[in-house]
Image (cartoon, rainbow, N blue to C red):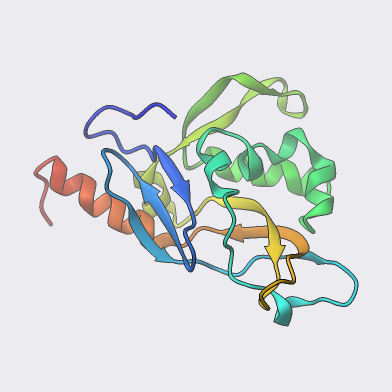
Length: 176
């Protein structure tokens, strides 16, 4: 993933190491916060009490305009992760557009009149609106060795974006 220029408010990488989620806005500094537990559809015999907080690498695709950001392009996936159908998928993509830097020039969404998928997470917009990226993810079991127990969605915590905005302000010499 290409890095954005110095002082840019865009997230250049996003992903959860064990137990937390991170956002990198520039350089090599990662800003972290505890992860949330996904909600969604569970395989037979499993439920929310069996779920682990999100630990996969699904968050990175939201950074480039796929995953939850492009849910309107694959409404069947919305159903698979327990997020509804076409109407809900379009609503998620529209919501993600509110925190995106722009539209992807190649990842087009036919259900949105061929608009580009929202791309680039703008930390300023995340903090200003309180809308955090929606991540399509597999749900891992809490017990070691169980593996995937379902599929769902999870919201990135606001805290890592608040930290990223504070770091950006510091880089730009803005106080307060």
